[in-house]
Image 1 (spheres, rainbow, N blue to C red):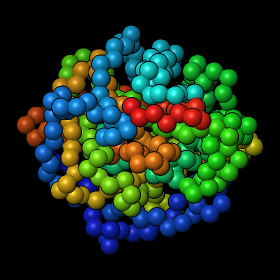
Image 2 (image 1 turned 60 degrees about the vertical axis):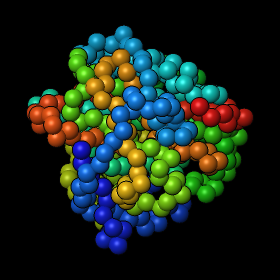
Image 3 (image 1 turned 180 degrees about the horizontal axis):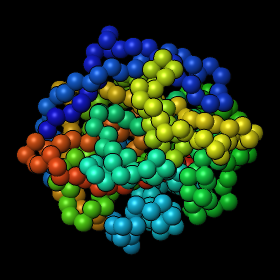
Image 4 (image 1 turned 30 degrees about the vertical axis):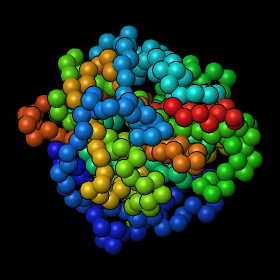
Length: 354
């Protein structure tokens, strides 16, 4: 298998992050030019001596049945009303000390004709075939506070907030209630809540096992978490799945589909937000990295990936992953999968490792 990774940092260009509602976040951030390709050998995750965990490797694998049919995964309302409660229950069983599990987004991924037929407002996206994490510490805080609990984005995406939100609403009072104070990666010194995570629950939805475009996962214990990695700035519109383009010099390298043209996405003061700019880390290649693939995953199995963890006590804070092609399998074979993004708020005293 081959992975696409980032080049030497001396080749990187400089961009500028623009995250909403926070002063001092426009610091220069490197942007990756064209990635290179590296062959890798991946361990078979099914044969690991010890089950991978969120707090060590940055991901975990398990069985999880669903009442959803294959066709229902392509329908946003069915996902909202039927699948998201299943995911919330799984997250609460899997992570100790959960105070709230706020599901805010999902993406269905595939290739070929089905991807080409999808429209701009759908939650369908292509495979993410470059090595990446889904956020950075700064963007992880901002995503949770400034977007999920700072705009009406989730409600607009789904028509209403998912049932698992309960009484929580995007307000400044809930921001203060749920999050602990933070001054390094975010200007939110008034919080009185706990730590938070963002996790991604990933599963195949096709009728047979995954044979191509497997999800390869980097073992977080083989990549020092304190490494400073190049960042990529990504401009999202506010559709389910967030159609995205890379930001360079304030522009995108490809046009977006007129994001938020009706002005429905607003901040807490009612100001229109036309798009969101986030960050993703792209670690440099190292021969010491250990990759893991779970071959032949079926639709009754899931992977849970740690997107971000606000805790800085030595546990793995994020997972790095990529979609990979198997050179022994026909290029025309496609994968169908869904990933659900969950903001997990912990009770103030919760610090147990999985």
